[in-house]
Image (tube, rainbow, N blue to C red; front, top):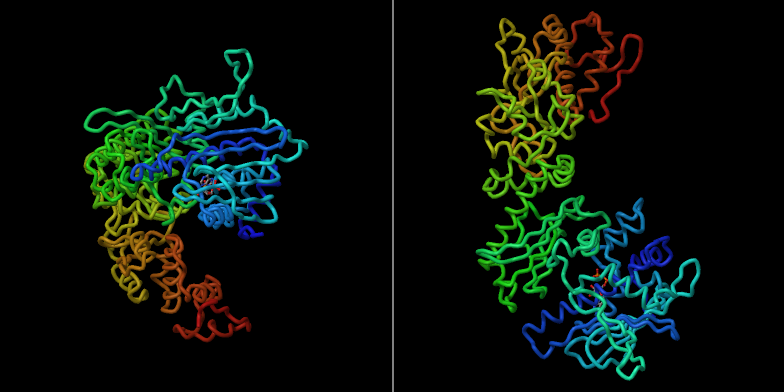
Length: 632
Ligand code: ADP
């Protein structure tokens, strides 16, 4: 007896004992596996015609034995494959499963993590698989009760393929016996597996000519792939159901696009935008691509060439008669026809996005929010080659409107020479509290919030929209920004000296209630510095501490002694850091404590330098001044 892999076992327990209500989907899972197995054999038969066969999937209930058998003449499995494929739950899903298990309901797990075959244990107390690999002469049997493990032994099978034999559980709250009823099976195939491209058959009684009844295999499904069906022939939720099942997603797609093209290239495509990125979308495990069929024969599961990287979240199917069936994967990559199709699909998808933006704003906002990182990346990638087709699809949160707007909507309110102002930060909430916004708000100007690291790079790439240049409100050159020092030159110099090279200092008029904020001069913004640092690069922004000369704190600096001056500047600089979402400096807390010890009124009597033991060590009333936690 071999044991299931540890993680599989846990999941299996869940599947078997789950409160999963929709047990009937086991049949769909088995039929779909059978269909995949036939796809694989059919693909091999393209180059080895001895493998060709009349492909079928047969369902046979046996009331006397209380078994239901699903058999196919697909690729089959060797003993090792039986062990590898059925002894462990889809390997890629297992890790993710472990991570996501908490708080996710079982139903979703079954959908997302590909436990297809194991669904059999929802209705069966024993599952027997007899399989013979195409091209081999021996067959093997895999058998399991779904809990204690599985056994593999030699077996007989006349032809290549796989039979999955379910010994149904005894009826309890659930009526498992109904899976032996032909009418129920017929309905289940129609409901879940109608589009399967191979005949799904079941023995049915027919009146023979003489009047006696005979059993004959009859086909239950229409065999038309969903992407070939006419709209009017599609069942109400047929496309959604196809999507959910094929891509193991329990949520219906946000957008479904079907297109049929005849021209430079001929193809039919059925594309889906999921409701959210799949759990591995932003990892390198994610493989983008559309399924590629040539006249109904699956050539490739995930053909990456069919979809640009920035639309990698789009799933679906392309069927074209234009390719030679026996085309190899290597030549596919350079196939001209494929490139024409890919271009057509990209255009189609973007035009559907634009249509959605126009006609169903709410839905588009959902779509864009879910995939904005990917789509924006498209404008930045390839040195901005695609930026012009994408820029009108972007949405940004607007400070003035408190909702998402397009560049176009933002620019409509501008007059010649106005800039498109933006502010960067981690979240809408954090940006909304940035001191740098005060000036723009006072001047009645709107500011776009850039919450994705890629946003500012995209803005640089676009350079302008409708003649309006982009400008970061935190840039040293920002509109309504730096003013003359007008008589405060000495103060500015003194602050700069106190900052010891951490930043230069410039007066600004953009602040109202805040005394200072941080900005960057030149080409590298603070946001870019952050992104570069995260990527391991060493590009530094040229920092400017912008000061509001009208603010009482700044005014008070004029009369402060050296110690108090330095501490105040330290606190102000750190205040600017905090507003920008940076960590504070170690000296920050000590400086605050010293200032608090001064009581906020008069400076200590003794003229004190930085090493003032009175406040650094003991104060006059014997209270020990706190040291910052990371101060050495
Ligand atoms: P998935 O189909 O998502 O990979 P399953 O648990 O349904 O996960 O199946 C696991 C693997 O077992 C499949 O990937 C396939 O290699 C193999 N398998 C299942 N059913 C069959 C079958 N009828 N014929 C050949 N191989 C099969």
